[in-house]
Length: 152
Image 1 (cartoon, rainbow, N blue to C red):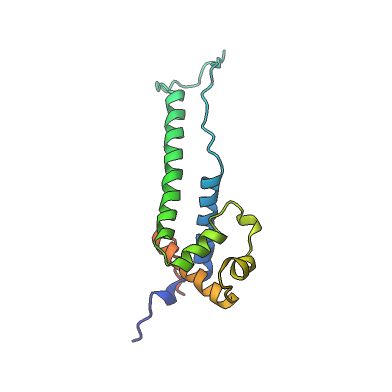
Image 2 (image 1 turned 90 degrees about the vertical axis):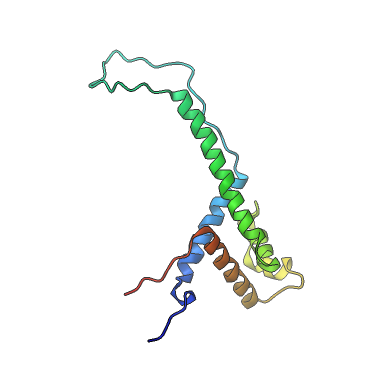
């Protein structure tokens, strides 16, 4: 009975999509400002009685405050987790991810630009793709984003 390796069980295309989605989420959290929710100052009244009393008092202000603190903290934690994973990668993998995926100008930077103009000396497309897959694989492991092949 042949023993398959863990690497052959990975769905590379789906894993790549998952990592790219995680990096997109990183950019949104990192570069878009967090707008905290605001409490309403005026109250609203209704002449129509509620159909059934719940006997639950709601504290709208505390709910908003909890959301503002927790959401901001989770955004910061997410960004720090990705940055820490990238920080521990080899130099070229770290450079590739930072230049191509972790910048605010991501929409204007292409793979071609990175492997021809950012790397010194420039590298081939094949070498770039290999480095990118290695970086994606390591980031997927660190962030628990590995997608396994579906068995038939």
